[in-house]
Structure formats: structure tokens, C-alpha cells
Length: 163
Image (tube, rainbow, N blue to C red; front, side):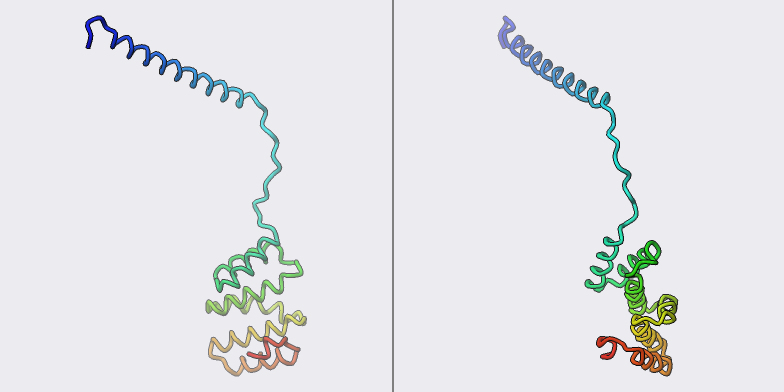
């Protein structure tokens, strides 16, 4: 270190420069923030928190393809509660009932299938075939045979006849 203080002056100049750069950065940041605070907020369209019908149907079919019975059941029940009067609701109900059967939730599956069976549509054949699976799972083979024959009588599709 020199006695004339040149080392201290060099350090002081660097410190002063660093300090000035810091002050400039802070003032620029504060001006930017204050200009953002003055601007009016843009009006945003309200975001719907409910999933759309197509989103739920995609989720249901994806979960079905993956073999995720709980996922089918959850998304299907949500679909049925939101869009129960939709044309796809019977098909979704059949998928949910099938998932319930695989999860051995037979009573819930029966509750879902009863309105479809009483409806008399072609979906009733599929519902009767699923009811046969429920009765078979419960050990009531006589009722299972009756439901399977009813499904065939109504005119079940080929995939039901193969069961």
C-alpha cells in the first residue's frame, strides 16, 4: 500500500461507480413498476370453471382406453351430473356402470343401469348385459342368465353376444 493513498482512491472510484450503477438500476425498476401500476387493468372474460362436455368425453374415453376405472367413474359421474340430458349420457352411463362393475361397486352400477333398462332403447341390451355381469359377480347365476337372455332378445350388438 502506498502512502499517498492512490490505492484507496482507486477502490473508492470503483465503489462509487458500482453504487451509481445500482442506483440507476433501482430507479429504472421503480419507474417501470410505477408505470405498470398506473395502467388500467384490462377486462378479462370470465373463465368457466366447469369442464366442457367435449373435455369430459375425451377424459372418459382416455381413461377407458388406459384401463383406469376410477378415472372413468369420476369423469363419468361429473359428466352425468352436468350434462345428464345430453345424447351421449346413456353411453357415458354404461361406461360408468362398467367401471363400477370392475371395481365391484355393484349397487351403484345397478342404480345407473335401471333407468336405461326401463328406457327400452338399444342401449337397454347393453345395460342388461352389464346387469348379467353384476348378478354373476354377486353369485346369482339364475338372474345373470335371465339378464343375458334378455339382452339377446332385445337385440344386443355383437360385442354383447360374444360374452
